[in-house]
Length: 344
Image 1 (cartoon, helix red, strand yellow):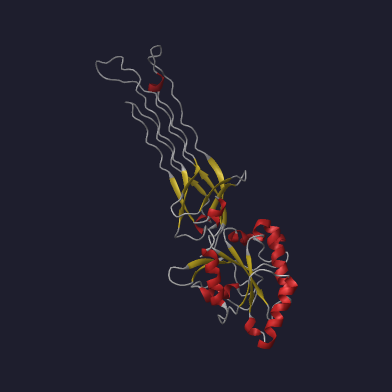
Image 2: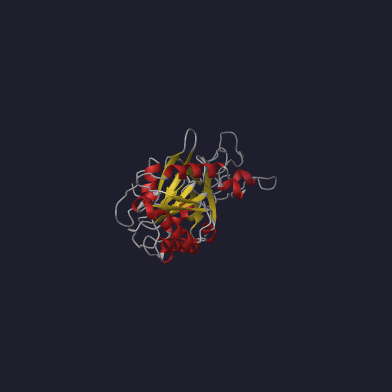
């Protein structure tokens, strides 16, 4: 299934039904008076978060959605039937906004959460509404109001506790395969990962967290180099970033210090707030360094980065060092409230 995380669609709520002009016509009742009923309200357009969806691909080919129009009023004081609402299912983490104004309408983060994105038109009024002591035979009615129409931008921002950062081939996909049941593609060439992947990492009974792997960044990503920074939005909900750095002698650039600095610079260009989020350094592929040279290599990288935060030495491929990392992440998350709670 193709991963789609951003789409623009057009939604149209239903118009309200028109009011009716009618008069009571029965034998022996020559002056029955007005009996035109009101129209029905137009149907609205709603988004509903569905935990079974993980992409916006359903909107890729169908871009226009319209709710049902309200039925017109009828004689004998019969009110028109209201138009049926249109409910569109979207993945958890979908942000809905007006594509023309840039206004954010809402954020769907809980299963079953519903958001109205287009209001149905108000019903028209029948001539019964206009009768009075001085106007006993009104011939006026009111048409139904138009339904709201808007170009809607949907953006998917994955809901994960931990996000993985790093250059292409840093080992992010290998790590998420090792510590979870996720199976992203892994190969020995850059940009193997073309779209974000989620994995549930278990750290014991009733202890788990969600990890997100996004395509690797390269220098100039903010200007569109490589796959750009379009996938960084999927890290905005994370509570912790794991910055993977390939410190083996066989890394693509051969300079892990510069690789790490490039990632931080691209992150800051995208969102300074995201760049300030808590970030742990994970030095990967230590198994490719001779044992007697490992500590010196690690020390050189840490001094070059002037790193003062948590650091872990792992081999994502063999699993070496991954267990202490997972338990440390789990303890850290349990000691801190979720991002949503922090914002309240």
